[in-house]
Amino acid sequence: MSRTRWREFVGGLSAVVMGLLAGTDARGQEPAQGASAPGVPEVVGGSVWSIEQIVRMSPAELDALYAQGVVAAVPAGRVKGHALVAPGKPWAAPASKGARVVWQGKIFDPSGTAVVNRFFGVKAIKGNVYAAESWRDGQPALIIDYSETSRVYARYRDEIRQVGPGLYLGLMYTRSNPPELKRYFALEAGR
Image (cartoon, rainbow, N blue to C red; front, side, top):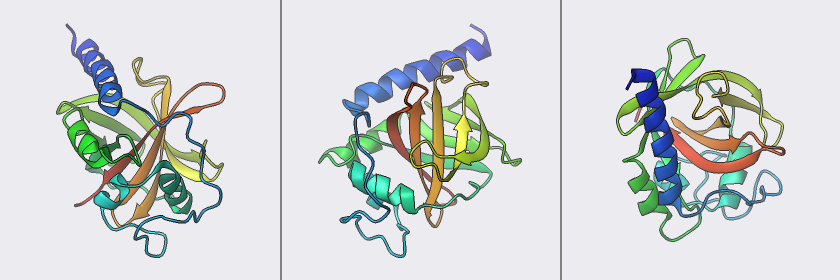
């Protein structure tokens, strides 16, 4: 099996496993009304200070936090990733921790224009990085576009905003009409 086909296989397998681990996904969640929904835990000045806070948030809290986030370049190199599995559910934290076996995060190119995901410890699923409008609220976001770089993930698009020091909240969408929120994820840089 060629290296490219192996990476696509691993990426496809990881997408299936992530869906199974989640049991549910972010589909059908309505965005929070306004940028400051009540109940966003321990947010100080629009920022959170730990991944543990983010993992325990509900979809409405994550939407409110994302709305408060800012566009900031993610530092080059390895960035630890956390799939936010079953947000708002009692088992969200352990499920998200278990999902790290499948997806470990992203590696951002020093140029700031490319990224590759890490699944099962293997670099797979490349994407192009650029700033553009969010599909969530039309405001600026850092976009990771897989449409030209991956057959497996071509139907997905990620967007990211910084929500705290070294912390980024991401939304993964399927390219449908209208775009559908598939999953929330978080990135930790330099921790």
